[in-house]
Image 1 (tube, rainbow, N blue to C red):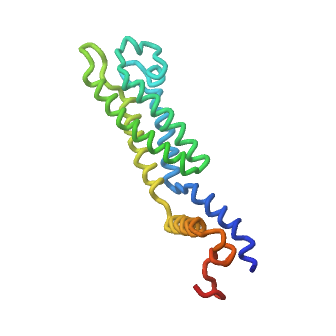
Image 2: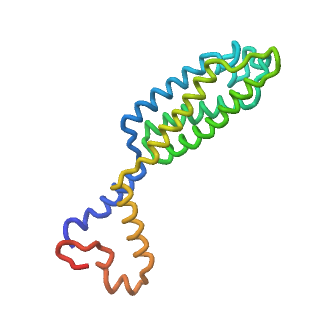
Image 3: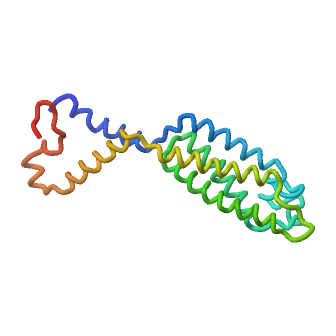
Length: 196
């Protein structure tokens, strides 16, 4: 047994940990700016004089503006996924959180379209979509785009290491107990001193 075999388990753990992480690079900075823009859009009016925070909590004339369900649902989806999960994914750099931020932002983008449309087709005498609603909808669409790029940008090295781990696990599972006792070095990759 050489020195490398002693550290093999540590290297495999490090590979698995790296495979679960994301490296957003410059996109992380763009996502952070978009999160702050999205937060700022809740201060702006979403319809008439009703601000985004008023839409969320049904306060300060939200009922009088005849807000439909898509506006409230969009507000909560944008807050939870566009702000909450985006910040969590950026801080922890976890792959699973980035996927949740992507899926939630994509859902919020579709509901945002319904929210804007519902404000454009509101009954006579009620205000249409405000600047805050349009800005937040466009920001959520941009967040969806950037999270999709981050999630799909796995490096070739990560993919190759993951495939190698799958093959090694499949080889270990396909062996019987007697086969593993007869040849304990069969799982090891061929090295410079070993023949395949």
